[in-house]
Image (cartoon, rainbow, N blue to C red; front, top):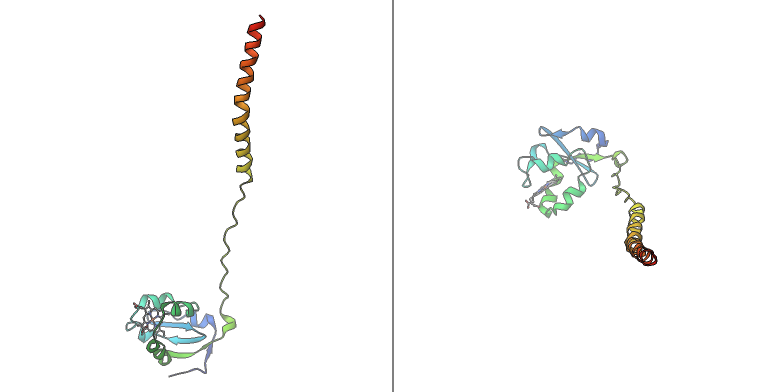
Length: 134
Ligand code: HEM
């Protein structure tokens, strides 16, 4: 079939996202795999879940065989205008809260661990001195 002449936008391809009409984007090409869904050795669910996005990584992660790649041509219906593919949103890890406050309270606890026994000791000496003189 080939059909390499047609160029679709990402939005147009994304509409073909169900069992009766399933298109995939792999390496900038568009594949109508509707008739292949039932025959796909990896199952139809993975193909359906690969619609509406650039499925290149999904396809390559599986490590498809050469014969699988040879099969693709017969389902190709055209290309996708790559400028219409939404950029992969970069994952930004949430910024770690700074534990300054915890460090401050840690410091106060250490200070108290030192000061409280000192105060008790001081009090004991004070009482001793007081009781001695009276
Ligand atoms: C036109 C597109 C595709 C064709 C022609 C195709 C063809 C094949 C073929 C022939 C196999 C058998 C194993 C092999 O020969 O490598 C296979 C397995 C598989 N494919 Fe695809 N595939 C396509 C797209 C995809 C996509 C987009 C995904 C992922 C979302 C996918 C996921 C899988 C998985 C999970 C297996 C099963 C591997 C296993 O069970 O060992 N395929 N595919």
